[in-house]
Image (cartoon, rainbow, N blue to C red; front, side):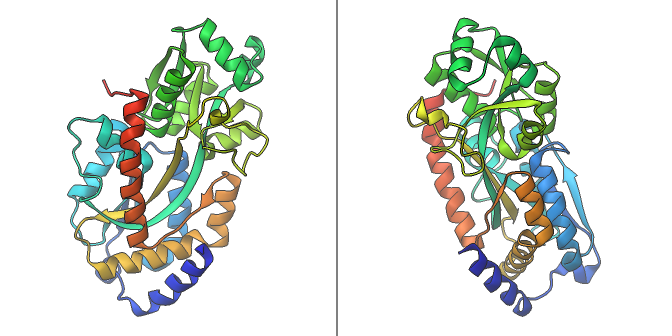
Length: 322
């Protein structure tokens, strides 16, 4: 299905007008609502290397803060001319609306969907050295340890409202443990805190954690998808112990609402072509990410479904943003 969409989109690109940005000789700006160096940032930068052949100069602008809300608000306020794009994610467009009382953007009305880019599991990870010192070799060991040390442990996330934050709050509720949330401005600083021993664990997305899992610096204990992941088939799902536990991560490309349909369609064809290039797919495989693309309409429908699903998930988790 993905390959058929790619071929259709690539063929359609020949019939869609060139973006105004290229005709005007102006750079295209892609706002990444998280810090540089994280999985989202790296995946977008690799895609951009393939997009520039079609779009000309593309500038990545990192706008972290507010659980991704600062960057997404900037995209929502930008002119709808195809010159400013953004990266919508599960946190910014499905979770934040249920956590923040005064969100500075509407997750549906303020954006024109272009295409989904990926979907990956989150994974519970601990510092390998610390795990060895504390005798933590499995999910069960971690639950037992967290119960003994209730109120003393900390978990890092990429920010308030991130999938990692929500997974942590759900885990606390299901496992009946008290672990203190420590938010950071993105996945990269969050993981650095875990590697340096500033925090005890995190519910990171697999793309961010994969390199350090392979290097033996982080120990993976469980994935947070409903079933085991094909990427790590030997690793249990949290749901095997706590039924119904499910959190994963996705992100995709959007434009400000009102961007002309022909521009959105052109961007979709170009982005899908870039995402299925050998260079981008190689990076995604290495980062343990699955490439997932869609039409603009399908991506919009998917985001609406995710927004509705996470209303209940947030309520059950009891997560709040202080």
